[in-house]
Image (cartoon, rainbow, N blue to C red; front, top):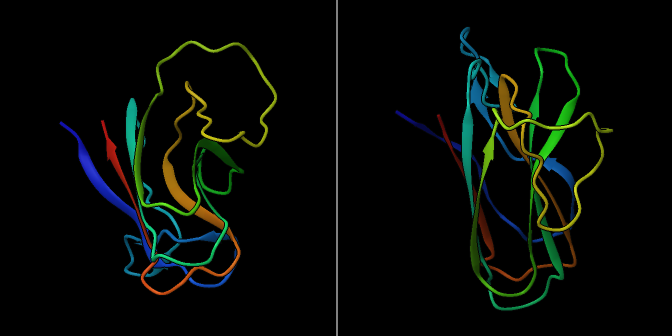
Length: 144
């Protein structure tokens, strides 16, 4: 059975540089910029819905990241790229896929990194140009 999480949503106007858009709640009730307690996740299906407001802007890049334990460095597992048209994109990351050892690096356009799923997820957005009113982004994750 999968659990669906909102990894963030926002209206995009000005430029953003690696802005974490995920908000969650810790077990003590405090705010945090991630969805955690996902130990044992085997796969995650990600969906990003970009509604273009009709003017301005150049690029909007969404990176979904995971980490291996509290305090661990964030690792990009998916990158979804948008520009000046509305679009909805999805991908599935399999945590059980066998992978060869490789350097952890930034993903290229529309890239995914199979085989690595930690205990938390978050969405990070970078945009260029100034998008007009009514440009919105929503990112969701179905965890299995």
